[in-house]
Length: 159
Ligand code: RP5
Image (cartoon, rainbow, N blue to C red; front, side, top):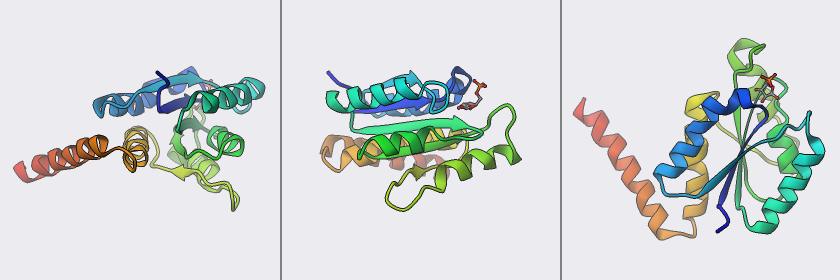
């Protein structure tokens, strides 16, 4: 069966953080696939993959990248499916990932990327947001998301 979500990243060096998105999706029983593809280093392979994944029925793309982080924007240019961008802290990052954040969030009008926080929290939230998008047409998934929220609230209240 085709996974509903594709988790992409610009480099293998992004994998540790982006696994948070994969683990979050798995925790919500959402199927996903993970690929390393770069807007700058493998533009043709990226285009081929997005075309093929869209044809297979992938519904949401999560894209993590650091530095001049153009992966999410490049993917958004190639599909009308929702794209979630995760800014990462590259080895040469400026201001703790502010470079990647601005690269991802400042999309031109008409080609949106839903941008989440920098790093691990952003990767986890990207997984939750992708699940929330899918849950608009899936009551069981919506129920699992409610349980996740209730679990978080119970933890806070337990002190
Ligand atoms: C970006 O450049 C990647 O997403 C990564 O965050 C950053 C550094 O990549 P490597 O030089 O570690 O491969 O494209």
